[in-house]
Image 1 (cartoon, one colour):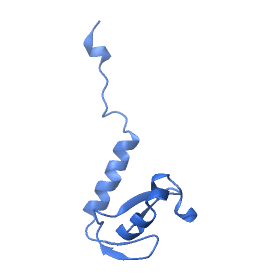
Image 2 (tube, one colour):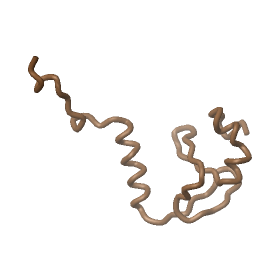
Image 3 (cartoon, rainbow, N blue to C red):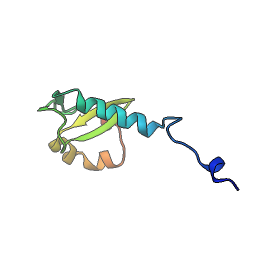
Image 4 (cartoon, rainbow, N blue to C red):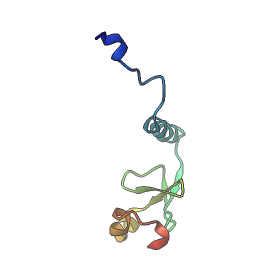
Length: 84
């Protein structure tokens, strides 16, 4: 069997993971922003590494450390924040 015909290239069709990585990279390169906790409204500069990120209804939402700890079981069971 010819090995050239069995090889596939990943550069031809971008995957969803690649698109998500590009979105995150674009957000990080955009510069300093202010992020607000979707639960309590606490503000932080940039995207804090200790905050929890969730996708709800196709939109990214962030939760501060205090809110994430308080609602950890709900987050892990993938309940929408409306149910907390």
